[in-house]
Image (cartoon, rainbow, N blue to C red):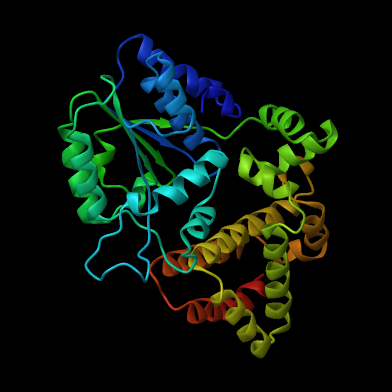
Length: 370
């Protein structure tokens, strides 16, 4: 996978290649930014460029992402079939990972969880992974060039793994380059953040998304323009808009249902609503809460009646037309704080039924705040 697979992001590509041409490539890089903007696509393409020695055999291995000096690290889960003392490592899911990445470098944690078969678990990078990485990187490069360690979502490392990786970064094996793809850098150890060169990847520009939609998906320019604006710099969001019956439609239905039931103070129905939410996997619960935060923001901005300030689908805007007035300068911050607290609680394995029922009850109070 080369740079041609990347949508937009020319500035980052040029910066990385300039580091190589000027012989000032750091031993540890961290690409940071929100989901869906192409960080993994950039990381894979750059790793392939570093490992491409011009030989036909190397090119063939890189096309299939099977180069022996390219090592992937990613969050994993513990399957029921694993022994109690086994610490899951990336190699346990190498087949599933390879299949997912070869489909394209733009994917979500939910897609990865589905590939592993553990939608109701939380994926982490264990201490066993760092031990495995130490072993792999201690070996000489099989092709005589770089060894590349590509770490997807290092913020999901447990503390034991993070400390071991820190030692590796402090004293990297010869000709080893670490490329980290991170969405929440603040969750990483400060000592790790201080030892990597951080590159903040911006959202994809609308023009690049429009062009990719026309060229790769064959849709009209008008449709591409609308979708690119709604995507807000994310190729994954653009793909969601293309899918009939996408998850966002389900999320909108849940949002509308919650707001109507909370306004009508239907406690019994709100309990049923919270049980439906509790039935989702934790990753999906967090995605809905993130969607909730976006909708609260968009409904608040809708009150200003300026089209350039809002980013909603037609269905979302149809609901906002009557609902937006209930989101105001008095309650928008408490509502946002409530959703962020729920995201934190779900991430800490709190009981979903309790979290979402409490969420519902508090929304009753907040919606009538003037």
